[in-house]
Figure 1 (cartoon, rainbow, N blue to C red):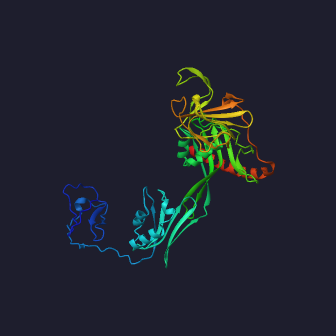
Figure 2: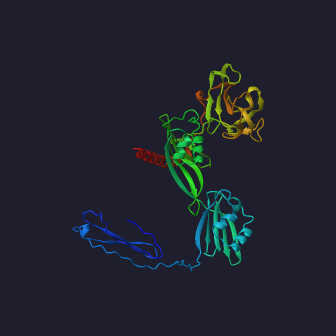
Figure 3: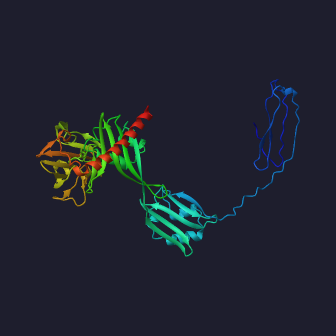
Length: 446
């Protein structure tokens, strides 16, 4: 099919070719033109028994009128309509109003009324601003969900623009995701569409059972149930907490469910009611890698000699937060020989932990200060005898350094008897969700 260009006069020709063979003609296609769109297809049909050479050919040339100017459709309605603009990096309120085609008068008045707005100072790239305008650029309404639970609203009234910023109710949605570790945990959770904040919660919840620095293996599997919140416009507002998680590490399954007791305490428990919060975390960093393990003989990179390494070194960028692995009190904070900047915490019983080579200490940390498990006590550095940024971590039992992986550490308090019935009901529901998403994942793999 060939379309001929349209000029002031268009001819449509159908000609016989001298090289046509004696094949049967099933369809003869003739092209024509139409003023509005430029062309239209018409079909001429010859009987299937007719040969090309028997088809009478007639040349047809006709003048077709094509107007020089096609009038634009006129918009007669000035009814307001909704439109939206995504906030771009480096955007200003003025630039967004221009893209929304707000007229100059309304733009000036909007900027005047919104000059002290918190929302207009929090333009987050990727979020959307919705506006109701008319064809001539009059701004009727503009709204923007900012922060996590707040709505900016500008409305035109008989007395001019009225602005408000108000808290909104968020709707909770339950998300269920699963995945398999092939290279790293974060790569696996990214592939499954799980936010990093949820991944960090998973690590923290299971940190007393799984050392994510040393024990993660290719083929480990996970499933997680967590909260997300959407605003009144159906937009994602924020990520909530993990409700349940399952992690299969080296063919051993770990499960945890969230539960809040009748007295307001909350935490994560195994489905049979045992608290997953041990007295000590397995590691003082959220995520890094072990550069040197506990050893009776290691070649020291600075001293260039073989000597015992009575701790674990975690390689991490300078400034990475370091957490207390257990509740306790600061026994020492300062500089000490090869340790550089060092914090030593005294815990219940015969236990102490030490954190060396820090770049700086947490604000307000002092001898005698009380700390809770997970509190930030300092930041990774390379002070003292260190060739690169890392944390040197020690667990001391009765003053002797011990390998944390080989010490049986105490557990936290289990579910109280009065809450067992409520816990079992919630745990069963959450574990059922884990079962569903796990089975769906395996079904997809099959």
